[in-house]
Every structure is written in C-alpha cells, then in structure tokens.
Amino acid sequence: MGWREQGEEDFTLFRELDEINTPQYDENNCAISADGLVLFWGNYFTFPPGGPGLTDVWFATRSSRFHPNGDPVRFENKQRLSIPVISSPIAELDPFITWNWPAPGSALYFLRCNPAACNSEIFRSAWVPVPPPPKSVPFIRGDANADKQIDISDAISILEWLFLGGKKPECGETADTNDDDRVDLTDAVNILYALFLGTGTIAPPNACGESGLLANEDTDCPSFAGCR
Image (tube, rainbow, N blue to C red):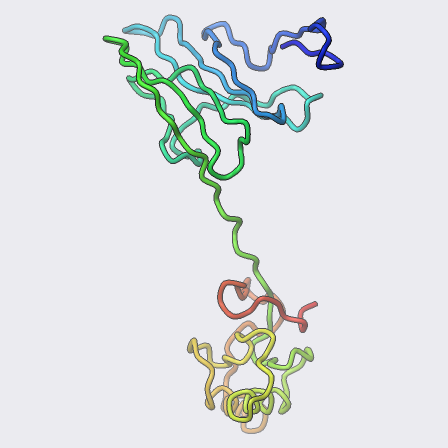
C-alpha cells in the first residue's frame, strides 16, 4: 500500500499489508472503495491438494484511512449481493467495484473462469441493502391514554375513540386489552371488569417491557409516552 499527502505528489510512503498477505495464497488484483475503507482482492491458492489453484474474491474493512484493515473475509452467500460470489470449482477473480460502493445498487464486477478451460466471463452483482430491524416500543396494555396507570379513564378513552370520534391512542396496542388483534367495545368493557368486578384480565404486558413483549412500529405502536 502506498500513500501521499497531496494528489499531485508522488507516492513515497509504502507499507506491506501484513494483516492480509498470507504465505499460502497469492493476493492479487486489488480494488478499493472511494472512501478508502473497503479493500477487495483475489486470493489464488497456489498449491491446493489434488488440483490446480482457484481464485476467490475477498474483502476487508477498516474504521478509517489511518487504521489497518480488519480480518479478511471471503465473499459467500451471506453477503448482501444479488449474485453471490462464492467459493466454488469455478474461479472468481479480478474484482472491480463502482465508485459509490456500498450505496444501494452499487455493484461488484468480477470474472468467472472454469479452471479446466479458462474462458472467462464477466459477472455483475449488485449490493442489496438489508433494512434495519424494526424499532421495538415498550408499552403497557390497557393504558390507552398513556398516563402510566390503568383506570376508568382508559376505558372512556377507548369508547370515545370508537364511538365519538375521539383521539386514537398513541399506541394502538394499548387499547387491545384482550390481545385479540382488534379494538372494539369488549376491550373497554374488559378494563371495567378488571377494575370493578375482578373478572376481566388485561393481557400482558402490564408493565413497560414486561417479559420482553414489545410493540413494533410496523404494527400500530410507533411510540408510547407511558414508558418514557
């Protein structure tokens, strides 16, 4: 690896990438992302048992331009690519990445070559972003008005929403007191039975984050003030 202080200067500083180079592989054909944080290369296994060497595409990342590269990783099916770049009897080599890697839709180009008769073909694999896991929101079932307690005002809040055009609860899950995946008259009645007759049962969670039961912003609970 070489670097320079300014674009018009000659490269004068060099360092061997000991964290990547290995005695049993020939590392070749490097490509680096525009931000300088991801390095790609081909690894040619010089003398594998029982046959000619094969090439696989590898990569390594680092946290900044001033840090060494992390552990080498071979592209496999677990990477987020539209066409997996995998270790196989067919050699994958000569990686090239588009300037905007790893933006969604950026691409890795590489060659595939059958070692028996290397008639190389060019492949393109697009980087497929994985959406972040949905945010989990703790809530208290039955606390429809999010005042951190369950009382008659919660039943009234549900009835006003259902029948009088009142405000919808901030977290719809709180109004589904029997956890039957819908909100109706029985949910308000359930609160009243639980409070005054001791016969109703409000489904969990009955405290913030109880038993790990969390609402999901993809359902009907983007937030809940009662647990903040």
